[in-house]
Image 1 (cartoon, rainbow, N blue to C red):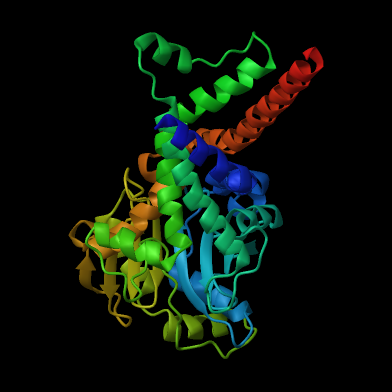
Image 2 (cartoon, rainbow, N blue to C red; image 1 turned 180 degrees about the vertical axis):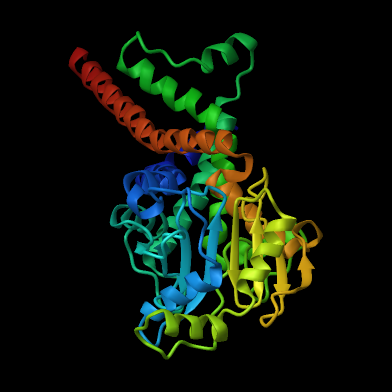
Length: 389
């Protein structure tokens, strides 16, 4: 039986191993993308002085709206728990665009978004630098990553079957990584023991990652949890809703800003204050036209959010949809994301996910090394036998 699994392990790893390594390594880099981005550009994401009183949300949104082109609207404002974090103002164009605004002065500090470095890492991770099709269907880069990830699952399972020791002594020895016995024992130990240590997390990453690659897999994955995939159903967290009122005032001073605030952002500040009163401990609060979402950042689904609906005229809360009362469809999507990026258990699971992904990148490379070395040794043995005849 092990002989069969060795062949499966080898002949799935050889053609797809390099893509597996790239996917795992780029995934490890993306685990701490937000922290690295904020640390490397603190002037964009943090204010210098947080001793003042933040501007009302409606005035802040109006200030940004007055500076935007006529065909671009403000769709929401996100407030963070850290008073030094600048507020994020979402805009309608381009897709998922946002600007960072000093909430104490109204200064627009710059545009939020992925840095060129992490955009490259993301495209490598998802599509091997290919370009996503407008319709969102299958294309070469996406297919290669998806197939390689699927093969990775079989490689991991077959690796566990091959590794399974029969005695306690063999188990103890197989979990050691030797660092003082030469290169081959080190790489071999890293391949075997490293794979055993990381296999559960790597399987979780691969099985959740496949939901972004294949529709048939996503449908089957959701059905296992009793969830229907038809329809939109967004994740909790920041919701970007296009504001239909528009701001045709172009450039403007305080008078134009007040007009925009009165017409387009009515009730935003009142609703925010009421939601804040009900949720004094929060990770972020996002306000948009008639809706407020609150994320607590608790352990579990990192995209979990309570949603409040409010009257755009008075700001009065008219309806509350708590995350704990939502159906499976609203929860499973956030859980898949949280498990895939390792955020489900806070910083501890993120660090473990980072380390597991790094080990996942090493497994194909060390496997190539072991395989090639064995081929060389066999060739030398054959040459030696031929010479002795």
